[in-house]
Amino acid sequence: MGCVFDQKLAMLYGAWEKSPEGLLVDRLSTELIIHLLRPQRGERILDVGCGSGNHLLLFHRLGLDVTGLDASPYMLDIARSRLGNKVTLKMGRAEDLPFEDNEFDAASLIITLEFLDDPLAALKEVGRVTKHRVFVGVLNGLSPGCFSRKCFAVFRDSIFGQMQLLTLWRLRGCVKKACGNVPMEWASVSVGTSSLRRYGERPEREPVMQSSPFGTFLGLAFELTYTLRTENLPVKQRLKRGAESPVGSSGFQV
Image 1 (cartoon, rainbow, N blue to C red):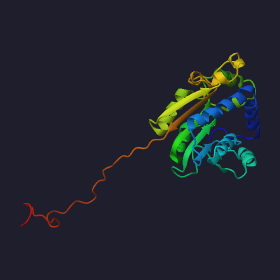
Image 2 (cartoon, helix red, strand yellow; image 1 turned 45 degrees about the horizontal axis):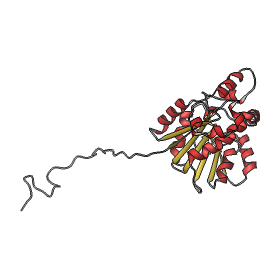
Image 3 (cartoon, rainbow, N blue to C red; image 1 turned 180 degrees about the horizontal axis):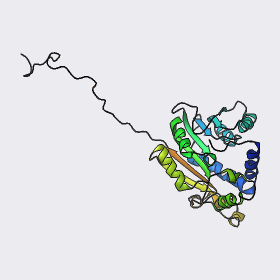
Image 4 (cartoon, rainbow, N blue to C red; image 1 turned 90 degrees about the vertical axis):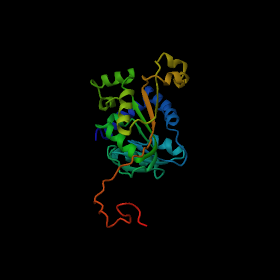
């Protein structure tokens, strides 16, 4: 199951969210999620690992029919207090989703895979319950900022101590194993250094910056494709000779 958030872990994660880096990632990643997922008003979307509901609120404001799932009753209580009956909330594991095949038009796993023991199983399950598009967002193992925070977590309490950071290549490999050779597109944000950010956030929104595999937040979207395969069924019973055939052994009877 991986790491299930309790009050302590929620506080550690909240501390990072409110840090300058976390606030920047939140602003930039919101734009990236919408750009790559391309949600359509009225679609059914599942947010796996919804936590306290930040992205549930985003999807609700975009006019989607939203369902959130999390393994932590503590985090679901926070999401419920924020959103009330605006969304559907369920407790469950990402590796064993309590939904029917193709129940949702789209799905997202945003800063979720890092906390799971088996990311591949979660991607297979999301592929099973989703018809069209899936967005996966992770904190990037190739980001200098994420890597340094992961190292410092050895010496002090940090949410990064609970994560297994993923890279673009590992994420693409997991998606391919889980869902086949599906079309993918990706981008990253929060790439620039602190000196570059003196010029504002505009450089971070440039395509050349977002095509770097080193951003703090890495987003990958893929379109589910389906193929049909025919399978020959074996004949269970041998045909009887002659008697049941309307045609004689030497050809048509006149």
